[in-house]
Amino acid sequence: MASYPEVGLFIGGKWVSPPGASRFTTINPTDGTTVGSFVSGTPKDVDAAVTAAFTAYPAWKATPPPVRGEILLKVSQVLKQRKEQIARVVTQEMGKVIAEGRGDVQEAIDFVEYMAGEGRRLFGETVPSELRNKFCLTVRQPKGVVACITPWNFPTAIPNWKIAAALICGNTVVFKPASNTSMCATEVVTAYEAAGLPPGVLNLVTGPGGILGNALIDDPRVRAVSFTGGVDTGRTVNVRGAQDLKAVHLELGGKNPMIVMDDANLPLALEGLLFGAFGTAGQRCTATSRLILHEKVYDQFLGMLDRRVAGLRLGDPLDPKTDVGPVASADQQKKILEYIAIGRKEAKLRTGGNKLTGGAYDKGFFIEPTVFETPHGTRISKEEIFGPVLSVIKVPSYEEAVRVANDVEYGLSSSIYTSDVNRAFRAVEDLECGITYVNAPTIGAEVQLPFGGTKHTGTGGREAGSSAIEEFTEIKTVFVDFSNHLQKAQIDVGE
Ligand code: NAP
Image 1 (cartoon, rainbow, N blue to C red):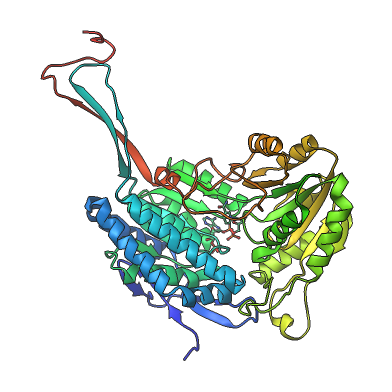
Image 2 (image 1 turned 120 degrees about the vertical axis):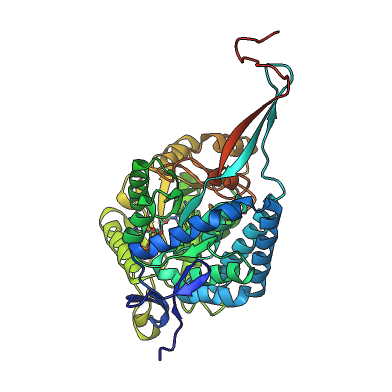
């Protein structure tokens, strides 16, 4: 008998393990122990999950949005009650420190609660007609069955961002989480189950992304795909979805700059940088991966940074004194170390650069917080590394800082530290990205505001806030003519 949970797929309101199904396990990146065992789903399982979602759709669509909202409110209450337990699962399966594990779950709670309220809004518009005795308005309708495909770095927050928004709008969902955080996904789904969501409205399929992703995208009953992950996978999803003219929403990578000007409050900028660059071991899509530093404060600020980086405590993420936990997986560790090797050749390593070995570290995936000094244009200064690796780029002016900030393929988050209010507002205009922070680091999303980016960070829409409603609804335009005779737009105007 295994000492860890053996989890099934959640289809049509039941946890099922198809006979003969193969399984995979997830592991704790701190010590390599097994967290759980999951069904390695197949296209047949995807078919069953889509069938369940398709069957549940008419009744869920017909459920008044405020009633859907009541269920979401219960979900948020269940998540609140279970917050500490789920946070520990997040930390054990993904490796972020426990304070951030709690933050991940809190973000989920906040968003589900926020979306519950949307059940009493889902606003349309009323618009004047060019004709007499005619009323024009718009209403929102769900898209149908939607697929939500999510990454591992916010393993409870991001799934809830998608699922709660999709459900409040009246869609039904097939959820495919990142394989290595399948236990976190299970915790998410059990909260919806406990809140009394009708069978089939939310379904979970676990297993290989390529196979399940393709099956979901190819199924004509799936009308929209909401995807968060890497840019290469996102491109594949988008191209495949285009074959069936599916609505595909993409939230992809980032290479987020923090500009520190010569008039910045340096101690404040330093606190922000440490949190932005090394929080979640740099594995946030909004992580501060580039410090664009004004030459006048370059040496002083880097001296301050050296001392603080040296003091960061690496270790067990469940220990509240730990600042930086392991990276999420062996694959992540390998990829980050490859980038560090590239960095050693093309830039100057200032601090860190090693994987930690010996004793307890041997079983986990630990990498030292790493700082490179580099000219703009090197691979480490332009490509997403997604780990605790910071590139520092020296600039002589605000204009050059903005040029460097914008000269990457991504456009997710950005930040500027300055005490010049005019320059701060200029930066809000000049930085080509979806999010700009002034005198705060590149991380720190709040659920009531839109979230997303420009260029290769996505396809242009936004998640969270009321923008999430745009992603998961179709607008229907309605004309009500109460004149009792045929009125012709563009022809009878003025009569
Ligand atoms: P990933 O490798 O692209 O995987 C994301 C999801 O896609 C996983 O569920 C994965 O399943 C699935 N998948 C893999 N191949 C697929 C395919 N061919 N078709 C459909 N789905 C497929 O990304 P990740 O490593 O999990 O996440 C890190 C990336 O996410 C980073 O680039 C980060 O910047 C980005 N991210 C962006 C945001 C944002 O809001 N902009 C937020 C968080 C993260 P398996 O796990 O089974 O492979």
